[in-house]
Picture 1 (cartoon, helix red, strand yellow):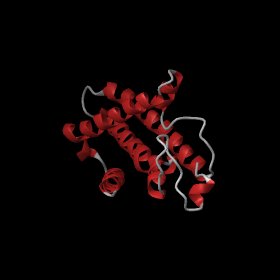
Picture 2: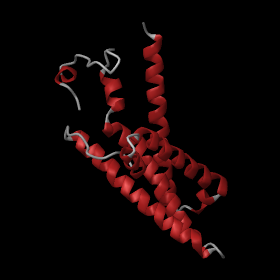
Picture 3: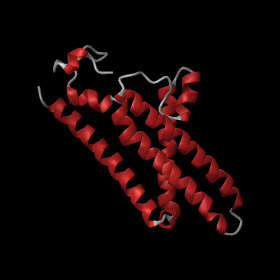
Length: 172
């Protein structure tokens, strides 16, 4: 994952031939992507699934239980995949699988990034559903803190990457 040139302090070259620096390379590593995007999205999915199962105590919501358990399973598999990607990156080994189940399906069709974008869309739909349905209020205190941590990690890392990229563009 990290070339000898990079370890020696020399920037590697990206696909356009431009020199990349340490931070830019770090932001693109599977470790960073899994910890700041993939795992937080898994947490959102997991808490959404748990909440869907929890609302079966409400009348006529039995179908949500099956849906909720499917989402929990989906989140669990994606969590294992993201954790695997992060660990393999730490071991400097390539991963033989994608970040999530939907992207893995996309690999079958030779377009994993398109399917990864679809997974991102579904994750944002889950976040909005939790907020707009009021289900966010059904989270336990511990689940709420987990939601806050995932949100904070995801948003702060995104803003740091955007800020860093804008500073790079502003400097000659």
